[in-house]
View 1: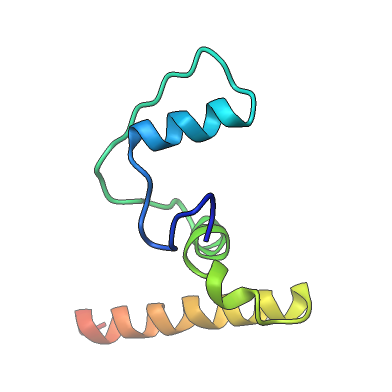
View 2: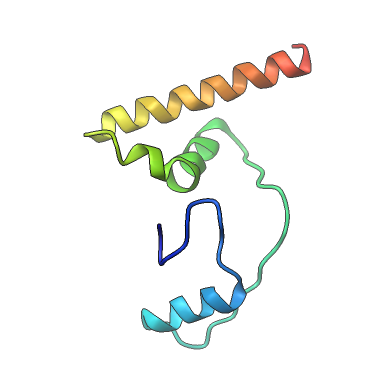
Length: 88
């Protein structure tokens, strides 16, 4: 959990504002967009997975090398499945 929220369940605008106020931010402006995440390259996608999606899984690995290896294997699996789905 991050700030009391389960992974995959994101806080709303009011909750984000409250969290930012609690840690000292002032003059807060929040703009939320409901859209797909798009990435320019594989490394951007890997960073997104490691910092957002895979957090609850990466905590079980003892070092950064293993975390990185696991995250890369997830990307490879996603790429393989996408190619198979698209028939390429």
